[in-house]
Image (cartoon, rainbow, N blue to C red; front, side, top):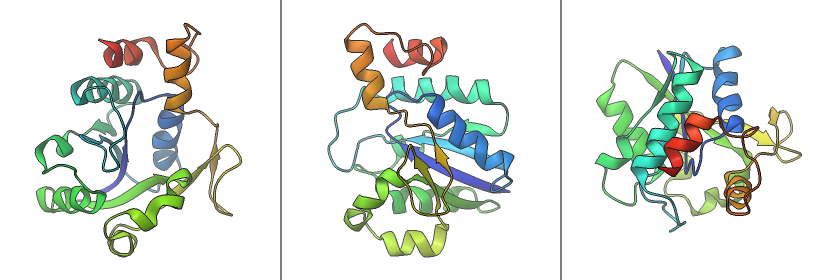
Length: 174
């Protein structure tokens, strides 16, 4: 079985994440997509507690169907957990599965800071997707929806129901 590993802060997860995860299944790039929220961000980004982000990812995956899983592996790895460590831990724990990294093109500008990016490319064949007008040539592009904007909208009391399903938002805010 081929698994697309979609790592991120998921602070909160939103319809853009759902579209990307569903797309890898629809175009048969993977048999399953696993959302893997960062336990602690490697670059010290402020996050709501892990259990809330994991619960929000679980709610989103429940909406998507049985081929989607919220994976808590980063809560069981040394912190900060680097992507290469997470991918290798998944491969070690699930030897019958093959893993590919699913990555938003907005992260490409920082991969030179990532631990072992060339190894990730060689061992986990990244699937790169764009957002809005950003993304490499040939990469599919998805709507420009960001968790940062959603957090701002929540703080300002603006509606987000078109961006985050109510049960997902409730899990993230609890």
